[in-house]
Image (tube, rainbow, N blue to C red; front, side, top):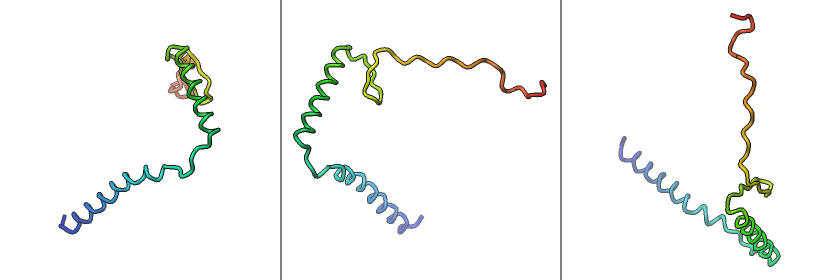
Length: 90
């Protein structure tokens, strides 16, 4: 590996690393939340806190926002028929 390849590789590594630091800056939205959005967020946070305190923090939340206090039941095992044997019985 010659010095030119090493220098170009180092410059590429620095450029890629600096892009990782810039990405979070683009995540900021340039429009503030409306008072209604802030009220709704506060209401949802308070509701979530009340639910967590009522169940002792043992509730599991799914994607629909509904909560269940019991863990999901495992699915029953399929029938134990041997699927690896050939159909001719050998």
